[in-house]
Structures are given as structure tokens and as C-alpha cells.
Length: 87
Image: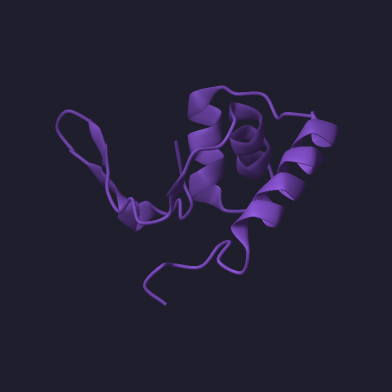
């Protein structure tokens, strides 16, 4: 499961225990790890870069499989891909 809007306000961090709680699951999706790691490495956001570093995941170079899967997602999503059901 991967949140679609990884940003600092969606993470609550207890300053004493450093326990992290993720909130706001409105944009969550089930994606293969290769998609998530590729996306994490494709951003210039400093917060996301620190999450990537913490996870220790390598960037996925499996572009052909990701391209095929992306094509399938586009075909089955219709006009709703990336849009909130509340819009």
C-alpha cells in the first residue's frame, strides 16, 4: 500500500519516542514495490528523499514492467485515474 500524497503534514511524529504515525489515507493505492521505489527516487522533495533514505530501497530500473502495468492501469481506470471520488 502506498499513499499518493506523501507530505510532512500526513506524518505525526512523537518527539519523545520518535514513533511515526501515518494519517490521511484518502489517496492510498496498492502498487508493486518497484513502482513505489521508482516514484520515491523520482522526486525532488527533501522530505520524500529522507523517507527513501530511511527505507533503504534501491531505485527500481524495471521500466518495461512498470510501463506495461501503467498501461493496464490507464485502460481499467477510465476517466477517474488520479481523481478523488468526491470530485
